[in-house]
Length: 260
Ligand SMILES: Cc1cc2nc3c(=O)[nH]c(=O)nc-3n(C[C@H](O)[C@H](O)[C@H](O)COP(=O)(O)O)c2cc1C
Image 1: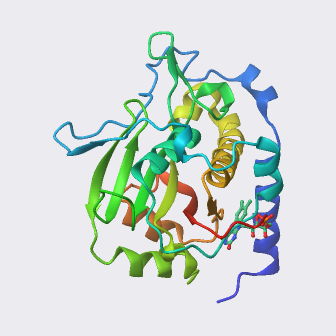
Image 2 (image 1 turned 90 degrees about the horizontal axis):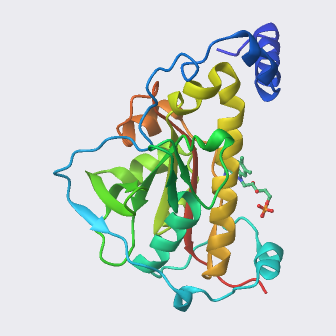
């Protein structure tokens, strides 16, 4: 059944309003932070018994282009990946560039990372669909940003098949050695900014993906931002509840032919 024009118009108005700033309303409300409700954790808790993979330190040896100007000029969305595996050092670098934690401020009040985030709330968790990465079995992993480690959350199963269906048959996504999947925990932003948090959390996602584009270029890889996907099915695939945590953005990464 087609959605009526009236209903469509309402959706568009809602969407436009969501893009506008409503920070002025914060003067008129009490946020959970101002009510001194305890802050949500900087990282989603996990089962301490999970098998962890420590990510290696990366160094200059993985960088094939250290010119920011050149990486900016080369940056394009890539939908064709070579069959090469990604090394664990390369994955470690990409995870650090997109969500790595360099420092913690206050009494676990905020993290400092290579990407900016409104109010330093950093509301995203990173999941990875690993297909071809040195030393890692296929499956879905979660990045533990605070300790720079991975845990495997789901074994292989029918993941590739599912991802293709979930992403409107964008076949190139499953050919990538790794798919970055960013899920938002909205309360991290709401705790501080309440109804003004949602717009800025989406802006945060853009910064994360842009860092992935540039970091990928630096190591001879490419990526392509993905927003065309089925919400409920991707949330189910990574086993998150779709309310207090839901996927917002994805990006597959692999080695690519160099354009310049
Ligand atoms: C928010 C956002 C969502 C996107 N979603 C998709 C997508 O689902 N599938 C896809 O193939 N490309 C997607 N793209 C990539 C755009 O198509 C691409 O950036 C655009 O065509 C410009 O090309 P360029 O990135 O090579 O400059 C997305 C880009 C952005 C910024």
